[in-house]
Image (cartoon, rainbow, N blue to C red; front, side):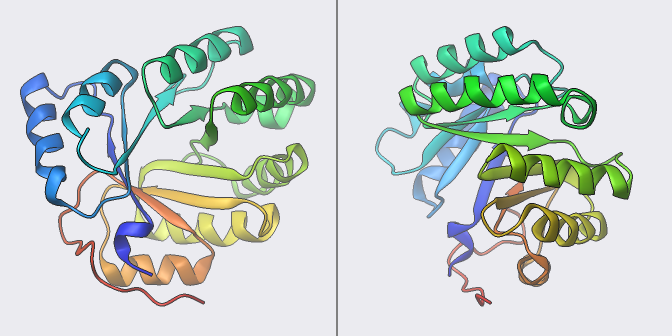
Length: 218
């Protein structure tokens, strides 16, 4: 498989100026990239600038903490899809998944209905400050709730990413597609993370990456 097939470029820095955002988006027009993730207020602009490409545009919901109510999440989901997003990444707090199981189930039912009506919804959990037992419990909860696409971290280090890939790939199971977010990565690191159980990767920069390079599948 090619690097481009498993990379999601994350342009989610709220401090980015409109000018910088436009420049970065325009640079992508000639790149073989499958998807990007932008902030909700930038979806329409990104769709316009990338209209002649096949790049899918996703956005983040209740980002970055995921502490919003179910109603708030549902409202933001509908608004984002109406803005033209091809897929969404919704942040869920670890506290809900570990200590508020009934609320997590209610959220799952709401998101399932919204996904059926609008499109793909991925689940994001910031795993950077969690203890190992908490990660195991969250992975089991994700599997039990039937979520099929889990996004972990936010610009994590390679060592932490590798450890998380091993834990979540084992405890969440093969039915869950696992995306790890890194600040940046090399081809060798991507290959090692795939071996550890990751399926795809979110990165903040394409530096050091050849999108047309081939990676081995295991």
